[in-house]
Length: 280
Length: 313
Picture 1: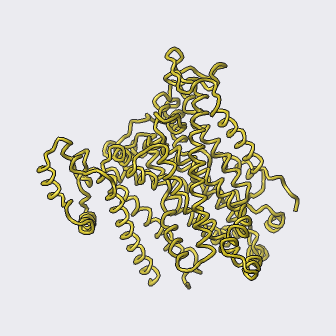
Picture 2 (picture 1 turned 180 degrees about the vertical axis):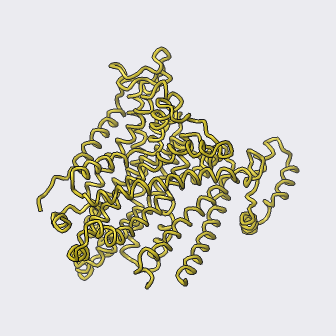
Picture 3 (picture 1 turned 90 degrees about the horizontal axis):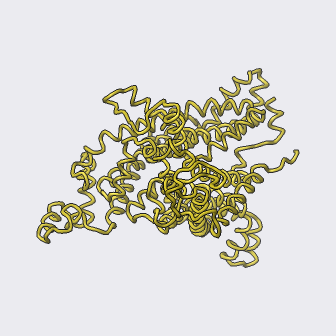
């Protein structure tokens, strides 16, 4: 079989590298102060000075998109870290040990994952209130089950492998087998779930901010919130909505391509020549 | 029959579990509903009287059963902010959200299944590759952004509809459905892209199986093989995914209602969350949970009819 370059991974990584470097740059330098209002420059279309134009308060949109994407990405980062860490621990333990606890934890997992995460986030936020820290914790906790499920099934598979039995026979402790022997073997699967996690986190954060339940405007700019605000000026200044919306989409596309490229969904896209021959 | 009865039993138990969760989740919220209803200037006697009247002094477990029986009777309590029964507040809105979700789901089916089959039939061809790129792009655009693009292009520029000018069903049925077309499409587009992708790959995978080769060798035409053999097997994972999709559509309509100013249950939910109108939030969450669980169980039961192997389990 001819080996094709992994275009998904290449495009995904380049796209994400570009956006992430723009975001990191935005932490230190933006073309203008994202919060500086200038009544004289209200709602200017894209031009050389303001590459993406200005909003209804005369703030530079490129600067705000850089700051907003930073907010979104940092929330996604912390949320995914929480979800991946606890999900790996829970999934690892239940998958490796099995038994009744495994059964119970997985049923709870199934019940939680049956609900869309935005819906669950709405429920929690209606109880706890809004804000940046709360969103991180809410999303982080909501991501635990999906990580736990993936890690569990991998651990359950690896547990049966000879190398694990071997290690057991040699008297290696269970915790060491789990984290030193098995964990590196499931890294590719874990990595692509992390990419999917980022994808979902960016979408969830943007949705929550768009619904005015995420990052509050007093905290920092956020892409979802910019979309919400831009809607009132859609006809006179469509570039506001376009900039924020495209930024969200590009972030999501980058992570989606990476997870695709890492082969999490490899089963979905068989490319072998044999298949073509059979159907021809 | 036994299978279905067992499923219904588990379904009812799950609903009971959800009702316990929802009830107690809303019990931990700090703040006394009486201060909200009477204002901060209320005298302690008045508060005590109202607490007694609302039954807030009873143990939580008694209050839970009271809430549950009231809920089953259709009495969802009284809204703090509107001071009217929650049932009255939501009755008309559920239909709007259901119409939006239903229309969107129908669009997903109509768009994704033919495209998925066509792409599998012509897998690895140039059109298939081009549509794969489009697929990936559409999947990455959040529905609310698609909604905003639709508002701009079809509403403000082409003037096919007036954004924000929702037409109630009682006023004009065609106007009502017409207004819902673009919101429904905004939810349906990314979802369809996902279904197309899954259906195509599921079919392509099945097409490499031995039974397909046998079917060809018996002189079946390509379409016959696809329809009679491949589809029957390939559709099973798709049905699971369609159930997930329907649930996501219900959740997505909450957001899309904001974009297009549709006075459905999602908009009410959001304004109630912001206004901390807990009886309304609690009711809507319970109703949506029932919908979510029902969809999952219907999908579960429908496998029995789609996949004959499950009958023998």
